[in-house]
Image (cartoon, rainbow, N blue to C red; front, side, top):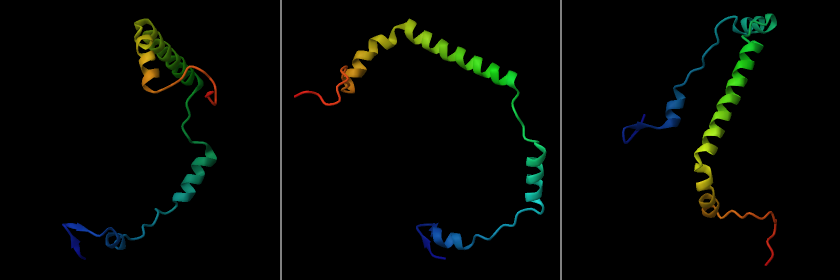
Length: 94
């Protein structure tokens, strides 16, 4: 193998890769787990609690931004810096 600045050629490294065999009966074990439904699921109470928590966290973030007034001070500068226009015309008149 030739060395290029202390590194091996990637194609030559790929020649050393050998095929790996799957463990015996792997496919049958997977099929049995699918057939018997041994997959883990989340119950509805945990999902509902997560959804409520997410909505509360999002509401808290919106409330903090609006109550601090930061968004109202930065918005005009942001619109101007991004060259955004307040009209909804697709093609501005010349």
